[in-house]
Image (tube, rainbow, N blue to C red):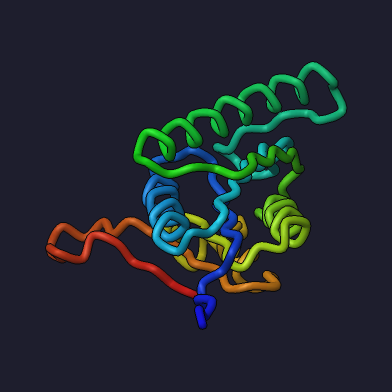
Length: 175
C-alpha cells in the first residue's frame, strides 16, 4: 500500500516585492523554498501613491494618468521579478499587482495581506530595508505590519550589511 507524503510546508507562498536590491534576497529565498517544497509561488507588487514623508515619491492617485503610469511601472517590476525567478529555474503561478496610498506603510501591507488571504497563502516572504527603530516608528514598516497582521507565517528576509560578519550574509525572521 502506497502512502501519500505529508508535508509541513505551505502549498502556496506569496512573495511581496518592490523590485529593490533589498528585496533580491527575499525573491531568491521564496523561489528556493517554493522549488524545494513543490509549493506554488505567487508574487505581489504594491505600487503606492501619495507619501507625506520628505524624500519619498508622491503621486496623486486622483489623476487617472498617474494611476496608469504607476500601474505600468509596477507591471515592469512584476515582469522583471518573474523573469529572474524563471531564469534561476523557478516558476511563478500567478502575478498580483496592487496600487495603494501608503500611510506609514500600512496601506501597502493591507494590500499584501489581502492577496495572501485571497490565494490562501501558507507563507508570506518579504524583504526589509532594515531601518532603525525611530525611522520605522515615524514611517512605518511594510514588513513589520505584514508580520503583525498576517493570517499565516511570515518570513522577513534582510541582507546583512556588517562586513565583519563573514559567513552570515543574511538574516531571517520567521513570525
